[in-house]
Amino acid sequence: MTEARHDRPRTAGALGLRAERLRDEPGLRDELSLRAADADRDAAAARLGGALAVGRLTSTEYAERLDAVYAARTFGELAPLTRDLPEAEDGGGTATAGQAQVAARFSKVIRSGRWVAGRRTRLTVHFGALIINLADAVLPGREVTVDIDAFCGKLVIVVPSGAHVIDEGGALFSKRAVYGRDSNADTDGPVIRLTGDARFSKVSVFRGRVDPFAALQHHLPSWLQQH
Image 1 (cartoon, rainbow, N blue to C red):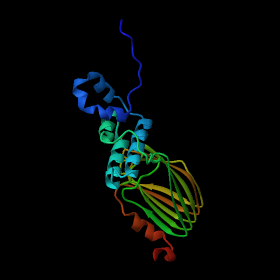
Image 2 (image 1 turned 45 degrees about the vertical axis):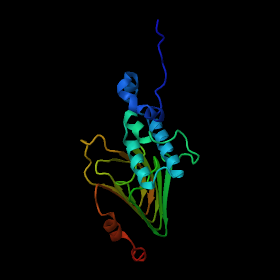
Image 3 (image 1 turned 90 degrees about the vertical axis):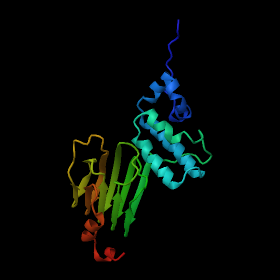
Image 4 (image 1 turned 120 degrees about the vertical axis):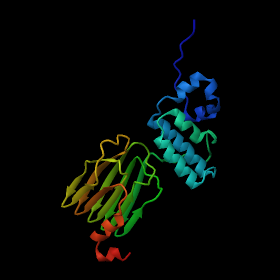
């Protein structure tokens, strides 16, 4: 009589070490086809962070692999991304999927390019202007919460063209607006959930490729436009 096994699926790292033997092991093939959870993607991301810290990966390689990690749906898609890395690094992982913060106080701050957002990203703008571009950022998962603290400021957020924006925040003598078409057909688009409050401020969210700098410049006071 064969004893039934109820082992938990292997981690992405363990599967990666055996990925070359996939064709000869039907059981492993079944495990690689299993859906990965957020915790599995976070574990792979932490491993990449450790490799970056000790110099095994360049910043470009790290960003590319991290983007692929959070786009992965199965263990099979996760495995190749960490296959050539040791199980643990002395540098430790990074809090990639945790929290990120960007603040602009009496200043103009721009965060764009291939930067790594947190699963919960807090944006603070007090008497200033802040541009946040999520269209090219590495998003840790399919839902990102953007917590807004805006007071007497201007905030521009650019999200991917297929993003679903859910604004649950409040406004006091402020304007909160989302521009661009919400394509319900793109079910794989990320969910950007807006929370927090805007007081005496303007919060604008644009989908897709836009020029947020022009939109921001139009609403800036003269002392900020010169910086």
